[in-house]
Length: 92
Image (cartoon, rainbow, N blue to C red; front, side):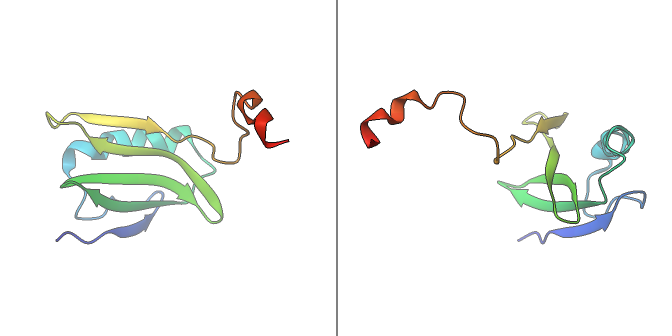
């Protein structure tokens, strides 16, 4: 079992974060100056580092791909309305 962690933007990544993600994390911090913290979780043995902040929805997630390559996944804005809402006509 691997435990998650949180750390503040600008601090070195948590010791559980693989070194392969450190440069990508630094680039993400530079691109999102309003973010304040990272959250490390694990999914199927791979690290998932979500950049967010105080009351801020996650902006992106940095993880490792199947071959160990760093990947950046943009988070979808869950507050945004669905692109196609016409299929709900049967509800009215």
